[in-house]
Amino acid sequence: MRITKVYTRGGDKGGTTLVGGRKVRKDDLRIESYGTVDELSATIGMVRAELVRADVAAAEAQLLDGQLAEIQHDLFNLGADLATRVEDRWEGMRVVEPTDTKRLETEIDTMNEVLEPLSDFILPGGGPVGATLHLARTVCRRAERVTVSLSDQEDIGGEPVTFLNRLSDWLFVASRWIARSAGEREVLWARDR
Image 1 (cartoon, helix red, strand yellow):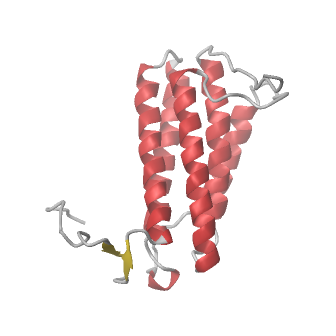
Image 2: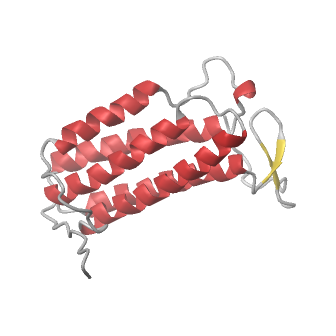
């Protein structure tokens, strides 16, 4: 693919074209779904930018950055998948698969091994990287909700909702893991306030 011109004027009246040629409005749930996935990827880009400045051991920063980079690639695959109706997919098209979700679960388990169990909810924070991971988690949950709504209207294949659900868990645990690595304090929710 070679992009030589950024603007096409094709969407100036509120419409766009899905992969496969079907024309839809820009407020279509499918567009909202992959647009929110794109927003999530941009938010993860912010996490990675914060990670460069964080006071975290180089090995831990490098590990987390590599995992986040892989997740951004997953999200581009997911966005392309959501931009393509199931009947318009092509052979060999890369979509998120159960192996991608399983990878997230394995990484969650590894990070969780060094974390103290929670006795209550925590407030989003944990330093700049942790807080930005919490922001990404909330965007991920919104992407999941929109994708669930889309899946109620039409077939989107088997893994997008599961992947987004697990990714939001991953982002939560990663925020705790990096806060611990940076020596940042987690604040428990004070129920009586």
